[in-house]
Length: 258
Image (cartoon, rainbow, N blue to C red; front, side, top):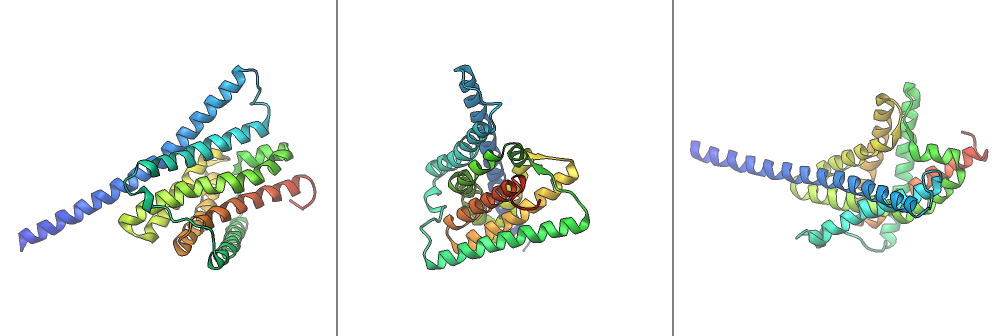
């Protein structure tokens, strides 16, 4: 009996070690993609400066370089390379053109993230806590044209690239070893944590904003799990970001009340 229990304990420990190794690997992949994207952005900016093309004083150029380097080559590129060289990569991503059922998930997802965003924001307001500010939106408030530029960039690049990495690969891989619900929670926490580098504010304000992002990520992760189609959260994610930029633009231009 004692030997059998020992074998069971050894099996459980082995499974736990495998789970921790997979989770740690996915966290490292997400962090590595972020670092790679920033290194690429830095190199591109330096190269442009060397050939006489100014960048640092032009927010639109910085935003485009950041989007294509970080989201495109960092998140999207690293994600695609991982899928190419992973032995299970071809079976990891579930994506297809949405059918009628997918469109219903799409509409429901947009409504869900807006309600989630509004609900969490309302709670934060009632608590009297200020959230941190996004560096990107702060730059856009000084240069409204940047906010309009970020609308198509969000839909066509940011949403798809971030969903490929965080929902498709990170969440999908972790799901294989611990199931969907813990995978959604962990992937959402990783996704939210990465955003800390783009925030302006005190630690408390950053924590508040990261909580909002975490809640939205939970919705996106659940949407992927329920729909079985990565295209759905990718579109919802891109549209949600675009809506935020349009709201900021309307406020700075005096079209809507802040």
